[in-house]
Length: 425
Image (cartoon, rainbow, N blue to C red; front, top):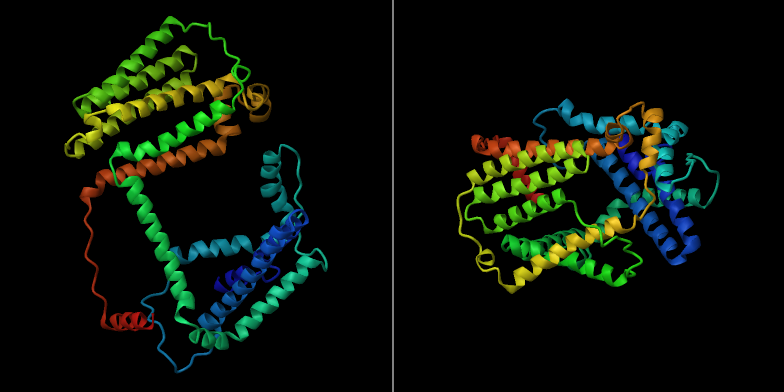
């Protein structure tokens, strides 16, 4: 497994890694035709990275598996052979990657042509091959393999030279410094963004959305971009449902107890469900109703586990700032809906589904056909997200039933091996 994976990573023909490296180099060559600086810079960086990858792969194979045993050092302590579940994932990747370079026409027709043609909205055929003749890309690949092999052969001299470098140029220290700075940046950003109360955390993203809305309003053409009949009045049923949702939303922020706020949130969901029913969308209404019921139940269970706490200062005294942000966010939602319904960005595709539901998907229920056929992968992704959320919720509720076991003490030989490794590190 390691031999094939390392050689493929090094880009040795005819493995799949060689094909990927050739495509990368060829893409940079094509980019250089339009932008010489970007193309040739990317080509040089990609070639250097590929040569270092060749040297690293050969070093891993030689020193880890092929080098003859010597008396220097002690062998690593192996407690047990790796299990099948440990070996199976890389084995599957190797077994899948091995035949791909020899089955390129079938792979192109099944995996590459359909998605690329769908994205480009036109028929596109991809032509991949292991051999394109003696060209610039093949010459660069030969140079990369040669430089990587030379670096591997001279690895002892390179290591000795690296020991004489100034301490500030030590690659290990530089790498650790980069990682430490990334952690420091993440800690600082997290403490500024998530280290305060919930209103303070939400204020930044909401104001960013408001800023985008203001820019869109200034860039819009009035009233050409908004061909809306402003004289049209809502239906009385729509007005009643709207007032019901507004009344419940006000109760949410004014409720004295958590249970009252949760029930009011459920009323808002019921109002949205009634909107779907009124506009002849029973499938959406059923989905909204189920989600609303599940949300209310989950909120009740979660807040039952959370001890009561004092109301944040921002909620006790709304003030002019919070009221202004609330009004701006409300306008953000209003104008988002206005932009959406005023003028479609793309041609409507409803007629396509109506005409092809039976012919292509063999189903008369157009909504079901869209969910399970035309947008099957989208539905699958939603199911995966719901499944992961369900597993996470189950883990949270069952967290109190499990206790972590203390780590088992290591045997004496393992302790000695661990101490030796720490000393070497």
